[in-house]
Image (tube, rainbow, N blue to C red; front, side, top):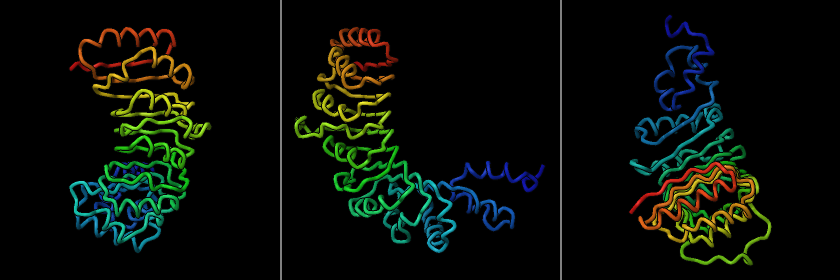
Length: 294
């Protein structure tokens, strides 16, 4: 069977796997039928590693074509291995012109572009998933309510995280590659007694650089958490099985899965493992654990 003879349903399913940039470059203008099909399809647009000339041409096309902008439900902008791509994109378009955008990913942005992006976030009414993989993003300047449900960020201080949770009340999934308390001791009296992230179900922290006490204070903001994944290295403050058991029992009563990867020196491994296994059996949770030896 020839490609042109395939039914529309199969072609639409096939086109759905394409990055919008590649889809239009490959099929736009071939014939009337394909032109119609690629213009009714929800599009995900990933500009990471995009050819500079293709990037510029597609941005110009979108700036003149509202219907094309309305097709895009996912957008990825990146300065990684590119020359000021995000700045160039924002010179063509505003994020709030994408009225059906549900997912936005930003990689390696600078402070100027970050400020512009933050100013637009609240006006993207359908946005539910946000990924910021950049060490230079001013989360502490977010001061409007965002109805984000899924958030992935590269680096965050604990005080910034408190502020983020205050402005994202519907958050269900949070992935932080590195969380740092900046050596600061947090006082429970300065925090709201009402948890601010009651909808959060899953938390992943790739590198936890906080004291246990600060983390204990923090989890009071996420009482309905069901899945907790943590990795930390050479942080002996985190190697007290009894403290973890008490923390989960008191502050995380709905926890189902605790997946942790703790790196420590060899002589502390046995006690940690036995203590954690005891806690696992006692609480009847599904736990996974891994210890790296140094």
